[in-house]
Length: 204
Image (cartoon, rainbow, N blue to C red):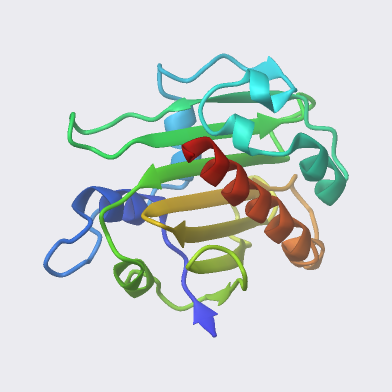
């Protein structure tokens, strides 16, 4: 079944507008993910060496050992925090960005935000282009981006679970083979399931 990429602003607006009349996002798509944008906010923590539990925001949800095993990289620095909100009625959001410290890429970003939208509304926001993920939340997708951004291909995975939207993006160094990124889907699915479980445990 085809899934579509949820551009991060669409997910954010979906979370804010939740049950809007037409359910359609507005605004243009930025080049970076919301996790990148939000992690740059003044409320984000300074980068810290892993253990990820020492960082703020969504970072403690990520299993660093699994991330290293799946990617074959040595991620050592993380920065996270609550993202910017549009007012006191805006849903809570958490972000995290993880890097090796050797270069800008590879990196992993994670964006978590609450929403009043139903899973049906979430699914209605999806356009063509991505594949579904089984056993992850109530609805989930993945896609590999190959656009020329100065970095390599990026694997994006997102899911909806119990009124919460999760978006994760792993961006590789330039000249990485897109086929190699496709091969990471199973491993990142396991990482995502760990994030979902950790979030559920954290929420009590």
